[in-house]
Image 1 (cartoon, rainbow, N blue to C red):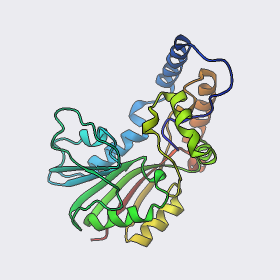
Image 2: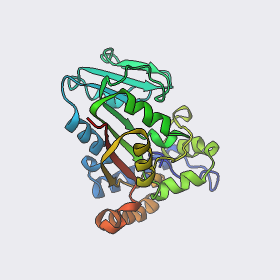
Image 3: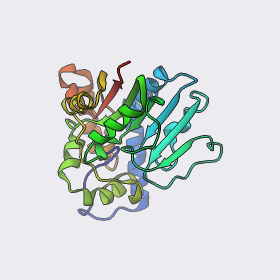
Image 4: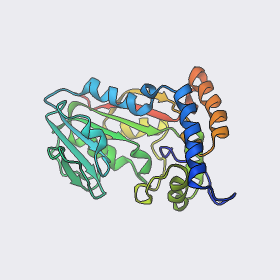
Amino acid sequence: MLPDDALSLDSGPARTPLAVSETLSRTERLKARHFDENDHPYVHLERAIERYLEPGDTVVEAGCGRSAPLLSKLGGKAARRVGVDLVEFELDEGLEDIELIRGSITDTGLPSSSVDLVISRALMEHLPSPRPAFAEIQRILKPGGRYVYLVPNLGDYGSILAKLIPNGMHPRIVKFVEGRDVQDTFPAYFKCSTQGAIRNFCDSTGLEIESCEYLGQYPAYFQFNSVLFQLATYYEKLISNVDALKVLRGWLLVVARKPA
């Protein structure tokens, strides 16, 4: 699942900015009525990070993004914050203490067994071959250190559609649905988006899975249409309230540990 992605754009008349604004206003009201922002998967991830992070720790975010928004929230909660990404960085003022490595998570250059916690958010689905990333994370983690991350679940309809739609079409779709810059939309492969795949990658690189939790969220794919958003809300409520349907939820929150 590409966060807040959705479907198509070349059908129907062009909408005016006012029409778009009115649609977003309606969907925002629906979202506020039916969904608790404190129950968003991103919030669950932040809580999990804070649960394991100690003041003297070194934390590394894989795929931190241009402005490292997740790392920026951890100021004063870790001794050292390191972000790794292939993009050009654009940090806000006051975040100069965040160390940035422009490169791949498969080759960070960090010393072995030097990191207490590795984190990532919506990264692993973009790797055509996740195993080298897992191996590098295992290498840099201290014994007993953890990798806490959030990845789209391939059982979710959004992930299925994103996997079926050619990657070349994703930037235009995302631009239409949520206005995200084309430069911030990346190819998606979903090689690490099921519990079985996650277990295989962890087992083959020496990590142990502590927990793997299914999480849902509001139907971000349908913010462009309030009627579809309402229908999708009914679906989200169903799979959120019926445990047997949890495999259809949008996200997997995973905690993996390097054995002590």
